[in-house]
Length: 227
Image 1 (cartoon, helix red, strand yellow):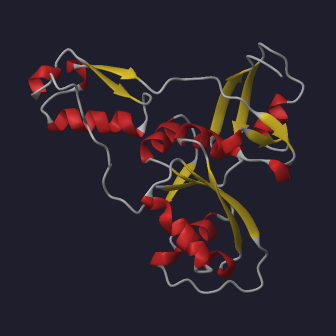
Image 2: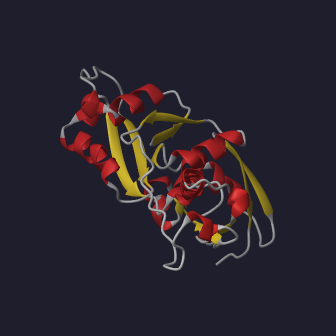
């Protein structure tokens, strides 16, 4: 899925994100818009982003696009919400979760109509009945893998109440470095001091709780260390 936050140039971003599927006409006399696109992972569904650049579709539509590895869907979704990224290639489940909490993210394109997950188990589990009472690991609750696990259980004639769902991806504190706008890179944790999160972190101390009013909703943080 290609996801954007609601913005004045959403139409132009959508046009270029699906440029290989549309016969887009060159933009005329419009100001170039600089856009950062994040990838949750290096997957083949992100290939059109690179092909559109190689084919000159971005330039024809007045866009200067930088494609970065966002270091996972969780970090990328947060970078999208705080304005460090303008477009994100990520699973739909996380987007539905963010919007369910008051966010305003929009799906502009999808190049896959299936959830490409593999549901595998210990060799001792030989049937669906053997899964009852067992634990199933997902990256995090509410994630794409969590949704995929629910669908897999349904296909096996089971429900979430038959098993224990555990987060296996971990939840480590995120580190950020405040830099100028030109040096910002969400993958490396470098955020602009002009972004909503950057402005909220300035002057804070350890133990402070922060709420950032980002374009896609309110995000809460706690400062656990300052180096």
